[in-house]
Length: 116
Length: 116
Image (tube, rainbow over all chains, first blue to last red; front, side, top):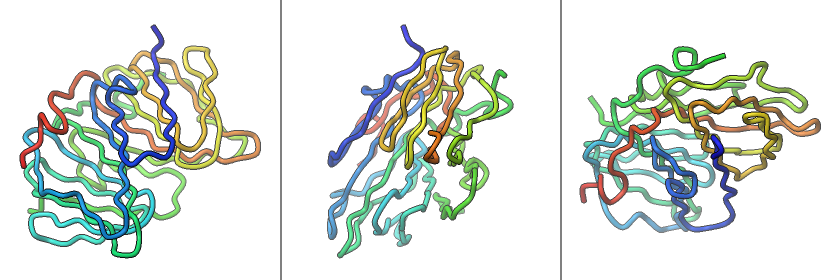
């Protein structure tokens, strides 16, 4: 069995990569909210840290009642307990990646986990 | 203390987000290889699964001796043991995200970890 899995993303509204890539340490979704749209609920997490990366467009998140502007190139880390909801701008879509990982799960990384 | 951290990425060659975002379940880097360049070594990992996302440009990876083409929109999951090296195309840069997470660390995700 290969040590790798590859998936080529086309134009979908939401893609979930966990099963496509056989991920074991993360779930990753790619999401597009049309202009004026929002995720239709507030949520938090039990165990998972979420990391959001804005790929294109603009919008904002409301996190524990605070409004945080989002533009392409912005990255956000959210603790499991953060109550969050995401909104596209009224005149622009918001395309973003959401990465779920178990909070506190990372041990070494980069040079402390690599074998050269 | 806020339940979130935000970082806005400008034009850097390589950005490491672990400390910028106070990540606890992943390290994430954003990398740009100029046309014709490569990461100058082959590496694998002890514990970490790596997930690569190609943001812009083109290139290829050599994984356990196999050449895998990479274009914008491609995602790759690599088991810790995979011996990997990344190359930009001769005439295009390769801009990509690398996500390190501990293999096997994810428990629930999305609806099985969310609180609404």
